[in-house]
Length: 167
Image 1 (cartoon, rainbow, N blue to C red):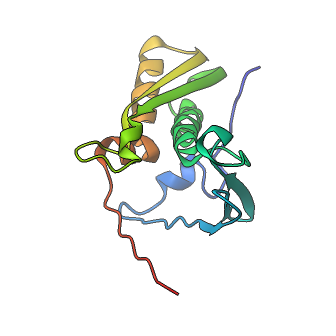
Image 2: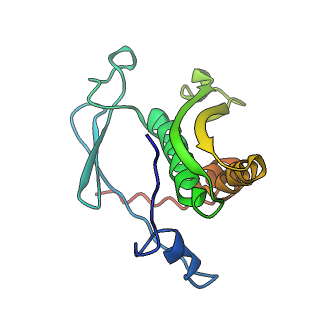
Image 3: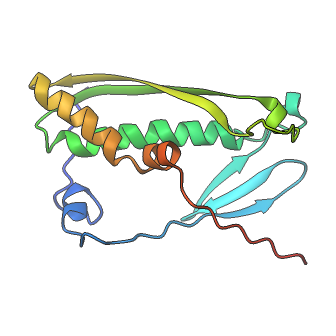
């Protein structure tokens, strides 16, 4: 299967991104509602995503937990960026898969002093079946990782402003 994507005429595709001003900010938004137990329903652009904890952690397993979705988002972002930039680097992508894993110390969940509640480390292993000049493939991979907003947000951190209104 040879995946060849044409973004020239797509409004938010690669060439569309090229035409954006250098300081363009795009706002992304998700609306979430707490449901029964630990089940959380997220609505994003008309899509529904169910979050939950596994039964082993007291949930009803209605969907992946937030940590799993963070890992999936990282892998999906890298795959999408590899596909977007492949044309620019004259690389034909035949297949692509990613496996993402990370560990957390559960004592962080339990508010143990000095223990982070986030991932201790994350590993992403991507298998890319591609045809093209080896240097172009290397440049494609470097560019995709550099330009992946999820990779950047996790690697470099991002300021989070949290406001909780009591009702």
